[in-house]
Length: 66
Image 1 (cartoon, rainbow, N blue to C red):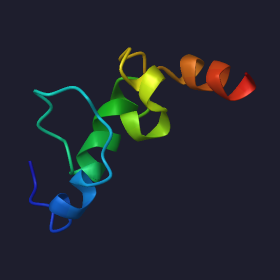
Image 2 (cartoon, rainbow, N blue to C red; image 1 turned 60 degrees about the vertical axis):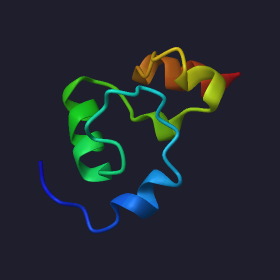
Image 3 (cartoon, rainbow, N blue to C red; image 1 turned 135 degrees about the horizontal axis):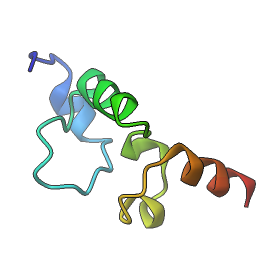
Image 4 (tube, helix red, strand yellow; image 1 turned 90 degrees about the vertical axis):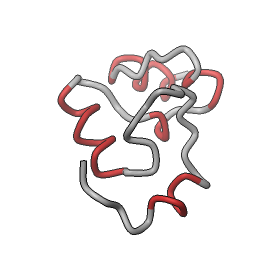
């Protein structure tokens, strides 16, 4: 995993509640991981949706339509 010079600053805005995540604050790694999984990162979701860990694109689109 690469060093991120903005990690501390990114962590201030990161709403990911998955505690063992090694990508927290390293946005480029987070985005790369979730793209590979067919998902979006936590920062695309409000807290009530993020905490369900359903970060699918389908869930994002449903959320935006409501």
